[in-house]
Length: 246
Ligand code: BV8
Ligand code: ZN
Image (cartoon, rainbow, N blue to C red; front, side, top):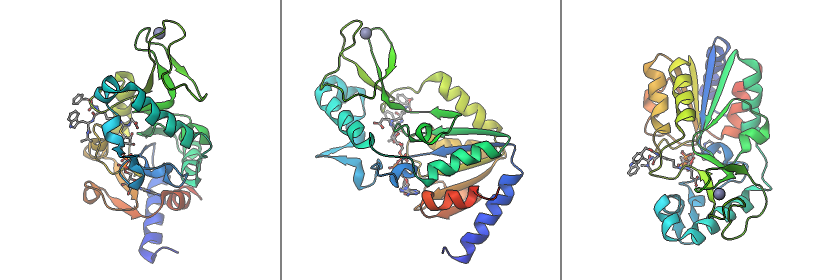
């Protein structure tokens, strides 16, 4: 069992959670790690000799769309058989037990939806969705895609419907995320290294607006010292402890 201090911390967090009116949870790649999904900056962040961040850009797609599609098709293949873990499932229960709940995720793996969460804001898109730059259509397509998938409508090369580095987030989704972050009275930040903007600054924005902040991560992050509580450990173990007996 975790050190006594962590048990006290869990109780303290639970007490806060009981009185919360609008809970916001922000998740990153760490919450999916126990499902077998490689994180972005951990050892899993590598594919062949490439760093994920170097392939997740419009420039990389412009330069070598076949390589970028190979990268995303590999990730879809890795993700397809994977299931949500107890961390995802604990957030589904939490959503049912608090007056208002908003789940903001940086993940594109679709595991929160697969677990049964409802009010999800996918800041960086979804790897199971493809978009045609020509006719703008976005479709969900879970099939194994060809090396260079083309739009059935206009024949243009499709792209993954995800937000690449240097691209703007969907304004509607970002607006809803900021509305939730500025209204929340309890925000939990789970499994993110806090390095990618604009998600990385959302915790501090909530804090400035008076929310109570807790971080769940294997390690400290650049923002840990500003939050009200931090529990170090696996989200698949800690979230069920926090969310049970509410
Ligand atoms: C934007 C989709 C306006 C794709 C992703 C210079 C030029 C251009 C832009 C910038 C620039 N400088 C800064 C920027 C802004 C840039 C940015 O922040 N760059 C960073 C790298 C410095 N941001 C953007 O470009 C964003 N757009 O700002 O638009 C704009 C426009 C033009 C110019 C300027 C600004 C768009 C960012 C979205 C990028 N797309 N994903 C894809 O996935 O293929 S981001 C990608 O990183 C994933 O979504 C991932 O979720 C996300 C963040 O990483 P984390 O989730 O935190 O994952 P990470 O591996 O880092 O950490 C995992 C954590 O979990 C660790 O802390 C670990 O300890 C913990 N953990 C592990 N296991 C567990 C665990 N915790 C608990 N339990 C466990 N079991
Ligand atoms: Zn098209």
